[in-house]
Every structure is written in C-alpha cells, then in structure tokens.
Length: 356
Image 1 (tube, rainbow, N blue to C red):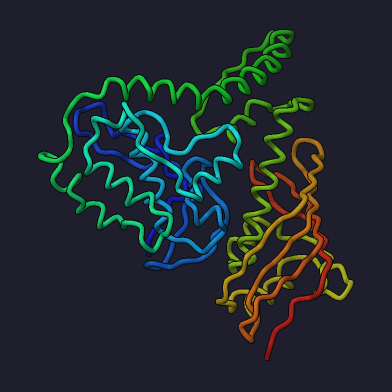
Image 2 (tube, rainbow, N blue to C red):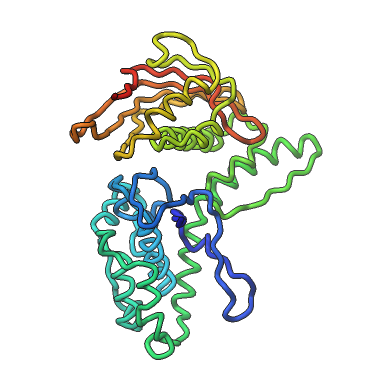
C-alpha cells in the first residue's frame, strides 16, 4: 500500500527541531488516501488551489504523481519566495495550472542553478505519466550531488519574499478571524466572560470553532455551508468507490430514506443499503465520475443542515459505452460530538440495477 497526501504545501511541512539539518515531517493527513502501487482512479477533488495538479483539475484518474506536482510548487516557492501559479481569480489560476503556464523570471531566478530549474520542470510536467517519480527525484543531480551542484549561497531576498508571500496568504484568514473575534468579544465582554482564541494554520475551515453559539455571522454561515458540501462530496465518493465502511461512518445507524431502489417505501437503517454495496457498487471496477450541481444548503440551528442538489454520474456500461445518469437528492445532516452524519435522505431517478 502507498499513501497519497493530496494536500502538500509549506504549511504542512514541519521541522522536528530548531537544530541545523533537522528532519522535515509531514502534517495534516486529513485528505490522505491509500493506493495500491501505481493505482490511478478518481478519488475526488481535494487539495489547496495553488498546489492542485492538472489531472485533479481535469477530474481525471490520478495517483501518487499529484504529490510530486505539489512538491514542484513547494520547491519553486522555497527557491524564490513566491508561487509558480498565482491569480486572485480561482478560475484563471486553474487555467494557468492546467496549461503549465509558469516561468523563471529575472532577476530572482538568475542565481538559481540550471539543475534546480530542471528538477522543477520535471516535477511540473503536465502529463502525470511523464512526470518524475519520487525515486527518480531523489536520484536527480540537484539532490544526489547537491554538494557540487546545488548552490550554497544565502538567499536573503528569497527569505524576504517568503515573508511577503506568507503575509498575503494569511491576510484573508486574519480578516475573517477579526470579524469573528469582534463579534464574539462584543458579546463576551458584556457577560464579564473571557474567551481564548487559538489561531490555526489550516485555513478558513478551522475558524468555525470561533463561532460557538453564533447564530448570525455571515462568515460562520459560509464556513458551515462549505463544510456541508465537503462532507456530502465525501459521502458520494464512498458510494462511488463501494466503500461501505466509510459510508456507515457518515450515516446515523437509524438513517431513513426514500430512494428508487425501495420502490416508494421508506427504509430505515443500513441493511437495505448494505445489499447494494456488497452486490453492485463494490463490484464495479469501472471508473465512475460524479458531479454535484447547484447545491442549496439550509442551516437548521447549529447542529443540523439540509442540502439539496443534482447529482450527475458518468460511468461505463457493460458494453463499454459511456453513460450518464442524473438524480435529484436531498440529505439532512446532524452533527453529534463534532461529527456530521446523515439522518435522512431522499433520492429520485432510476433505481440501480444488478446485471446477471
């Protein structure tokens, strides 16, 4: 088994100590997946925008090569202090990445060795099949012969650029945190209470913890809605992969459902769903691509939410022909002990069939 991290970025690289030559450790394996060898499949859309690979943006099957792409982005940043792909507009950013539109502008890159640029080029190769592997990267001259090939000059300008890049990266988070803190402090001071804020480096998704008890903060609403979309995508990914174990973790044991397979009847519990996982979805080795369209989320208090959307499923039938299916779905999520679970869902469309 191998592991694909799927969210490699400077924030997730930690030094074991402050000593010179300290080991670098990876953090935040929340999006990591296990793969068999060089397995390629569509594991879902995951990662941080500036570090996503072209194949993920194209929603193609992917594997370990996505981490090598991210390593190329990280190496680029560490050498000059700014990223190879950058745009305030996410759509334009993604277009840059898919086109591999980066360069080595002067003067920052004038003092970077050709070997370093070559390694970056090999990591930022659009075609994942031609992208350098981890084993090959370790044998690259810039790494294997670093004492003679890699420059040892102190890159003070890079350090300054890194500080500016880090400041830009944190700006949005700082603004959101200030908005949330201002709201919370104004209420807490009136009660003579004290609140302790702990800033984290994982981005906006971690800041909803600052809004405990908040019922009107637009930022908090936005964060929670994105959280509901994310867990819904994870649930559908488990269904597409025939992963009943992951599916059960995201469902209440007494979940109720109206779905085409039940022929109009209300079913309760997971046994009904287990049959289809064991006899249909888990046996489907052909690629399945699922897209959520027009999600609408209604927050019901602080611990519940309803999401309604259209699910488009692309698959290959038994004759090798590409097919598309559509279903309209609504799901009710309830949060218990900080964990979201489905308590009820309704799905329309044609029932799944088992081919004999």
